[in-house]
Image 1 (cartoon, rainbow, N blue to C red):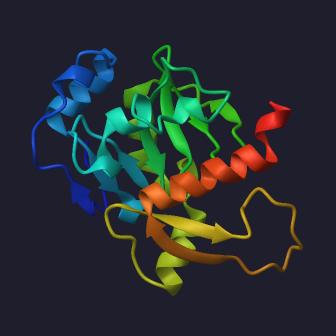
Image 2: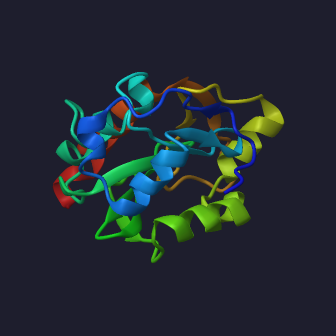
Length: 193
């Protein structure tokens, strides 16, 4: 596995042994080699089995106080939210297959690949496979994302807006972006699912 555009790689070993005991075999195998990484200039963050930093903690996203399944009705407690893209959409393992949660709307889709096929597809064509067009635009116009940041986009990408709408993107702390997405979802989509 050769990731491009790596901006962060977790240097500490597995510090959250408790959560490591519960993860699927493919993910465990990956963590033994790479225990958390941000690749493609911030386009994909694969969380690690670590307690700190919190933005890189698989436990926080899966079992923590603000675990994703507690907000999103289409996520189950056993779904493993191992990664996210630059906008805060979540990749999770469900019965050994990778799914995506669109964080603005709460919709989930089966990507019909297992974990290692997901990694291969992402490495082969990250922009298309991970839909990183907003990040490409942001980098070309503004700069880079730092580790622990995601892109905020206004208006939200799911909204029906005129074709000539100019989107305003800015980097925000991961926890701030995920909290905003959760509130937006609860206000606009949660009751309809």
